[in-house]
Image (cartoon, rainbow, N blue to C red; front, side):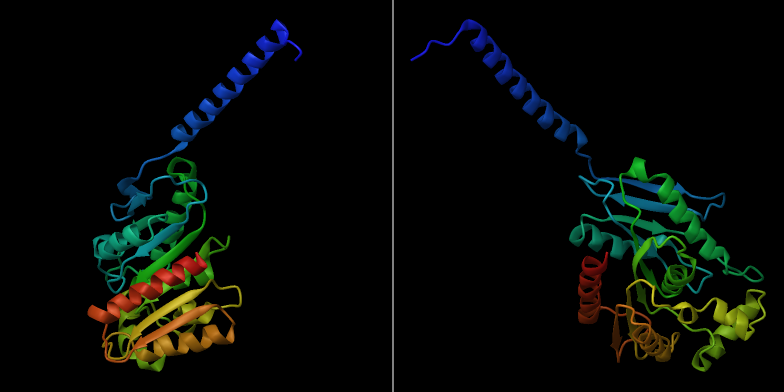
Length: 282
């Protein structure tokens, strides 16, 4: 056997050492890049004390981590992000790879219209998340879960204000969809008058998600109660028909004996469908 020269042995030794250091550096870099689960509460995105959000960031996130935005209800005049805590908690457990943003927005009052104020607040939230993307280590892919008035705002923003196609999907739980629906007139006409708005057909259509659905609208999941004293069943049924006509991917669930919210088996069913919809479309 040919004897190896000292110079060859030296080169071989150095090469092995280099590869070993390279592997160690790769392992070290991997450790450095890992990020921990964290949260930031009451992050300000505007000048009003109501313009704040909480953000919950998963461990090991990166710039591909998608974002769920929770939007509370309250008839546009009340409510708080704390009401969405159950959704935040279960999403943290069962959709742990998603970042979750739970928002407050400025509330309407007599003579102070929610429109377009609250839609502008959602725009401000989205823009703020974009400016913080590198700090938070999240993507620019967003999805909404909204309840009642929050569902209305989520749909309307997704259909008519999302000029950069940032929204992957929207979930409406008992959300108003069509303000010119005759079955909704007894509630919505005095509401707009209270807000200082003249409830003309043009204004009512302008702020109705139903009238802004297009073939490019994001996938939408709808949940309604057949005995809801606040939201007529037609709000969900008609939206289901409109989304079908526009060939928008969607699901529609009507619980015939439920009202403006529910518990028990139907709530479990709602969450399982929400989770499946998010995994499929977001």
